[in-house]
Image (cartoon, rainbow, N blue to C red):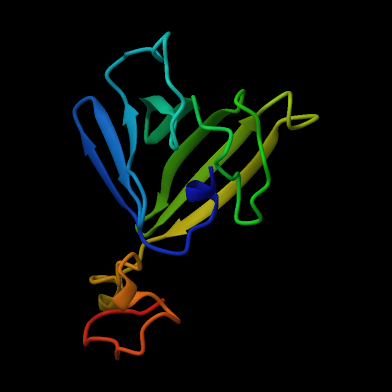
Length: 155
């Protein structure tokens, strides 16, 4: 959930027949299966869980289960249980704006469903074309004194 709730870096959304993929900075992609399949009966929990979805007009409705209970919900690292169930949607409301509506269900962690709406704005400035990967020691803030190379953003 934290990847959808905290937008600091640009993502790339790729729609192909049967699956919509969200490639996110510094983590695994979210694969939203839109080919009509159900959630697996023997689903092994994972960092992103398992997402299935369907289109209704210009809105992608998504259902996600199987998220590891060790993952944070948000940037403050609020916990959840292994029963977390996410229902969310993505809609393009303007040329450069997406609205992401998210509802979290978890009767062991919450007294009622938690709902939020995020607004994702397209990064069109050329400086976002090449991101510092933030995973290598030579690029990590505070670890290296190496100057930032031209064309990269240091975080």
